Image 1 (cartoon, rainbow, N blue to C red):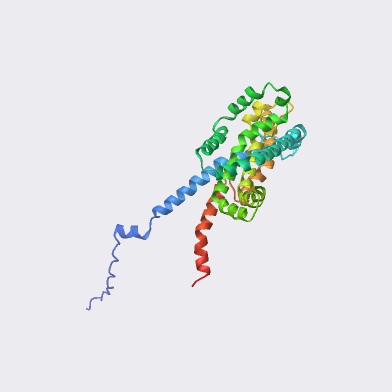
Image 2: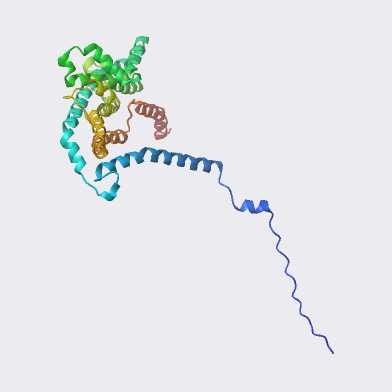
Length: 314
């Protein structure tokens, strides 16, 4: 009797298990540069949120019926209308003070910046440092000094001109430094010598050569002066009277009223006045010191010979 035949399937060779080190190579770890970039983005986003979220919450508070109930209570422009009705005089006064401050700083700061840029003496450096001194001092200290010296002149003390004088003391260094930085970066001595050799007077050289070349610094200083003047509180709070209450002082009064919706609505009004100036500074590519234009001018000078050489190959 024949025994049943048993069919045997050939055994499949077992696939060798890759070592643990090989499996690790299949999942590449991010490089150190990638980790640093992610960390930088995380810190930047957290910092932006830290700065922007309070502003957004303040704007929302000024547009809601009840801050504690949030947007669920409904949106309204009642608080903005209330602030405008009660404090519109402060808004116009702030604009007047800022405009007057700008005029004075232009008349005094542009020539001063030009002279400091042309002068190389030690005295000019001392004067430049003295001009920057009001920035280093607290605004309250500068206001107290003005009160000690000029407080006895009652008509001047109770007028808007007293606040303008304080703002000029605080903002003049920004105009002078901006104009001086641009004038120092420009080749004004050579241009002026060439114009003088053609018979141009000093006034002609100043208005046709100096001012056009210093224009970026003048724009930078003007925007900085307007922004700082509108937003200055410490110095203005010490110098103001009930009849000369500017926008920041009114903002402090609204927050003292213990009604957060009114204070937030006032903050919205403040943003409406200052944000266009800040956006203009960014769009025009200027800063308060004028150093950005100075750097661009130096880069253009370095690149000039290279571009000329490339454009005229011999």
